[in-house]
Image (cartoon, rainbow, N blue to C red; front, side, top):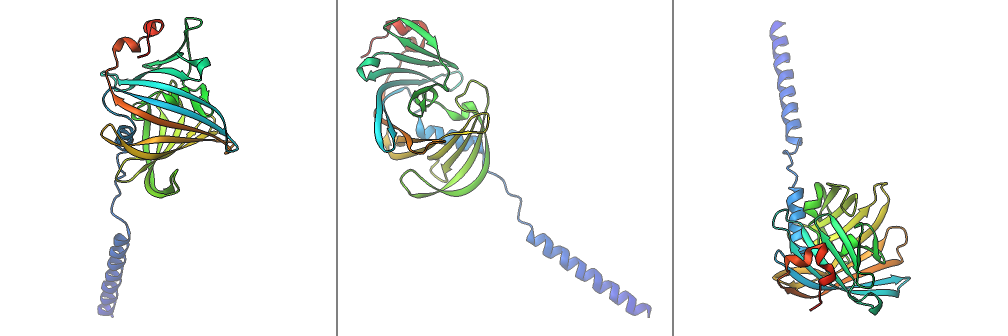
Length: 268
C-alpha cells in the first residue's frame, strides 16, 4: 500500500517537472530592444552632412494635384561644436517678392529678417512657411538632439515610391517646448538607417502631417533623400514637396549665424 503511494507520488513529481520544463521552453529568451536614440542619430546622419554645407531647397505646394505655389531657398548649415545641433541661415531666392529675405536659426532662436523694413522678428518653428512646410521643416535639424526616442516595433511600411521597407518604428517625445513638434512617429529602414516615413502630432494628439523621404541619391559622401513629400493630416489632397539640389560642402562663417549680422549679409 505504502509502496504504491510512493510510486504514485514520484510519477506525479516527474510529470510536474516535465510540465515546468516545457513551460520554460515556451518562454522566449529576453528580448533586448534596439537603442532607439542611436537609431535616430544614425538616421540624422543620413539626412544631414556632418560638415558645414549649403543646399538649394525648392518648395512646391499642390492642391488636388495642381501646383498652387512655390518657393526657392538657399540653405547654409553648420553644426554647433558645443551642442551638436545645427545653426542655419536661409536666404529666400524666389519668388521675386521674397528675394533676399532671411531666416536664421541659432540655437533655439528663430529670426526672420526683411530687407525692406530692415527689421528682424522672432518666429516659432511651428509657423507655416509654405503649404504644409513649417519653419522648423526647412532648417537643418538633428532630431536626436531635440527628441527622446523609444523603440516601438519592427514592421513593414510602404515608402514614398510604393516600395515596402522593413523598418524600426520609433516614438519621439519632444525634449523641450521649443522644438517643432510635440510628438513624432518615425520609421527608419533596418540596416541602412534611412528615414522612410514620419507622422507629426500636435500636443492635442491631432495628426498634423505625414512625411515620406524619397529619391535617395549620392550626395556629399552617402545616399541621402533629395525629396520629402508632406501630406496634410486632415486633407490628403494638400501636398507639399521639398526638393533638395546643389549640395556642396562649404565654409559657413560664424558671423552669418548671428542675428546682428543679418542686415549686412550679402548673397554670393
